[in-house]
Amino acid sequence: METLVKNDQIISKEQLLAHWQGHRALTRRVIEAFPEEELFSFSMGGMRTFGEMASELIGIAVPGVKGLATDEWKSLDEKDPSGKEKTKLLEIWDQNTVEINEWFTKIQEGRLQEKMLAFGQYEDKGYCTLLYFIDNEIHHRGQGYVYLRALGIEPPVFWER
Image 1 (tube, rainbow, N blue to C red):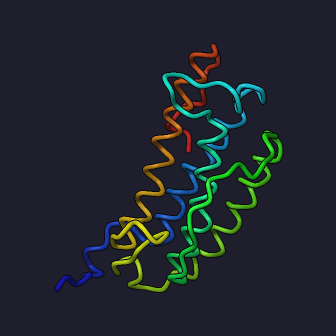
Image 2 (image 1 turned 30 degrees about the vertical axis):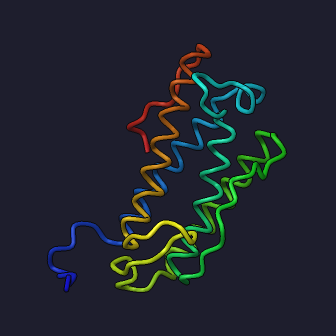
């Protein structure tokens, strides 16, 4: 049986949230850097548009942190909630930022060490699930960087979170 030794804690819950929100702020700047038309139409190599990838991230973030807090997991919904409007996508992104902050505080101590079935299909410990949300965002943001460079647009510097 695994136990969590608090003295060996590397990062606090608050620091982890700040880290994630730093990534989200950078991803938001990547969304902003796209011309609206290309955000929802440009793709390469059979990949989805960055607008579709951003919609996936929206579909995971708030429902994911709610699931971590409540253990109530809805099915993933990755449909574009913006109607292919960049301004609306950014509004939803910003509202999600507020909701993530709110729900994150409701995650009970020890919860991230519990095994869970996220979205009814991904079984792992809570912290692994949360790290997946962050890793997935970084992965898609990297694809967005490639798209921006292919469009001749300098992406935001990655280290400014």
